[in-house]
Structure formats: structure tokens, C-alpha cells
Amino acid sequence: MRKVNIPKTLKAAVLTGINKPLELRNLEINDLLPGQVLVKILYSGVCRSQLMEIEGKRGEDNWIPHLLGHEGSGIVIKVGSSVNKFQIGDEVILTWIKCEGLEEQGAEYLSQGEIINSGPVTTFSNYSVVSENRIIKKPKNLGFDTAILFGCALPTGAGMVINEINVNSESSVVVIGLGGIGMSAIAMLLSLKIKNIIALDISAKKLDLVKSWGVNHTIDASKPNIQELVQEIFPDGAEFCIESAGRVSTIELGFSLVNRNKGKLLFASHPPEGEKIRLSPHELISGKSIAGSWGGAIDPDRDIPILYHNFISANFPLNSLLTKPYSLLDINKALEDLESGKVLRPLIKMEH
Image (tube, rainbow, N blue to C red):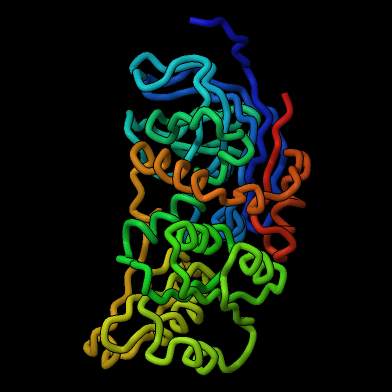
């Protein structure tokens, strides 16, 4: 077993209150529980889920102060006494989606005597204590930066396509919201040679990007007559709609765009806690269906190597989903840029 230096502290971005900027703190690392793994974080992604947590839109938060981040990449430097899936030196992807292995409670860190909470996985730090079942081995030739995509957006969006809708070469699909999940769904559809795709977003930059990938139909989602525009392309409505824009209004819009007899709306977005969706029961009994997706029904250990192989075989430009790296010092700027739509999915590069 190779010897590595085990840090006693880590640097992390901490949520100390709703709608407050994250604070950078040095935290003390406690001894590992039996099912925990200490990972040297090299890169972290940033998801809109973190924005929602910071803004208090995911319900009451009883764990403040706590760490954030649920997708990243790094190297295992220490394992708990009961961990047998990993060893020191393994290159891994961190993900919020449960994998094989032990599940432990979230790690507790100390900051000048104050307990700082975390979950089974957090990634806004240069080291992280995570549960064994929140990491998988990174494909050998996958870069650590690109690997963060396989921790959340890519498996969710691609998983919605391969696991939750039954597409074929003739299928018609509308994708609403070109964040990480929507982009990943489109990437998977294109890798499967699906041609009948409409992409909807308010960002011309994002629409231009998917056009460069080969999407033939794009619609500015700020236009008032979206239903008419979709019907010009798919007169009977789409067979499927994948929604990831995170608003009740776009979920309802997606339901209106699918075929009346057999159309399916699948959504992975989560609007603020307490908001309700309004649907017509007559459309439901006519044959339309709606379902939510939790991580694209992905089994990370089984599916992520397959997804990686598919995208590499299709020569898909995964790097086009990434931004120029931010440092952990600039985490609040990365969050601002994500919220404003300036970037697609911020990449945080850790310093050691």
C-alpha cells in the first residue's frame, strides 16, 4: 500500500446561512468512520441544486452550517476500516447518486470548536470525507476535469434517455432547459442518432452550441407562441419531452407539447419547495403521461463506464460542457455566473 500524506485539515466553502455568500474556512478532519473514504479533491462541478440550497428553496435546512457540492473528481488517500471497494491511489468520481458500497452518515468537521456538517458526499473543498457508496472508479483515459460531468448532469440527462424513455430513430423529442441535464440529454439523443429533436432555451449561446452539435430545431423559449412553433415541426406533438429548466411553468409547458394520445413528459428539475403543478385531467386520461426522474434511474457502477464509452465512440465534445476553471477562492463568483446564465456548468479547480 502506497504511503501518502494524510492532512489534518481541509479548506472548504461553508454555507453559514440562507442567502449568505459561502465562507472559506479551514476545517479539522476527524477520524474516518468504517464506511468512509478520504478523497483529495482535484475538481468539483457546480449544480443549480447548490443555488437552491443557498437560497433556501429546497425546504427547511436544519444542518447549517454545512458543506456543499455533490459532483467531483479526485484521488483516494485513506479508507475506513470496512471499505473494500477502494484502495489508496484510486482515481475516482464523486456523485450524489448512490453507488455500490457502504453508506455512512455525513462527516462532521470542526471549525474553532464549531461543528460543520456535511452529507454522504460534498465537493466544495480540497479534501472530502465521503461514504463509500458515493464514489466510483474513474475510467482510465477520462480527464479529472471532464470526469465531474459524470457525477451529476451527464448521468442524469443521459440516463433519462436510455433508462426512462423508449426512443428509436423515428422518435420526436423536445428538450426544455439547456443546463447541464438538458445538454446531457441532447448529447445522449445525438449519440443514439436521434434526429427529431427540438431544443428550447432563452439563451442564444446555448442554442447555438447544440446547433453546432447537430440539433436541427431550436426555439427561443422567451417567445409567446411556443406551442405553435413546436406544432409546426411536430404537428401531432412530441412523443417525448425532457424538462430540466426548474420551473413549474416549464413543466406545464412540456406537458402541453407532447402527443395527446401517447406523449410522455419526463422532468428532472425541482422548482422551489411548496410550488404545485397544474395539469388537465382530460389530457391525462387521453393518454398523456408525466413522471419525475431521480438521477436518470442510473446505476453509476454499471452505467457510467457505458456512457463514457458511448460518448467517446461518438467523438462527442464533452469539454464543450465545461467552463474555464475557477479557484475555490472564487466559488461565490462561480455561483453568480451560474445563476446569471453566463456559464453552463462552473468547474472548480482545487489547490493543494
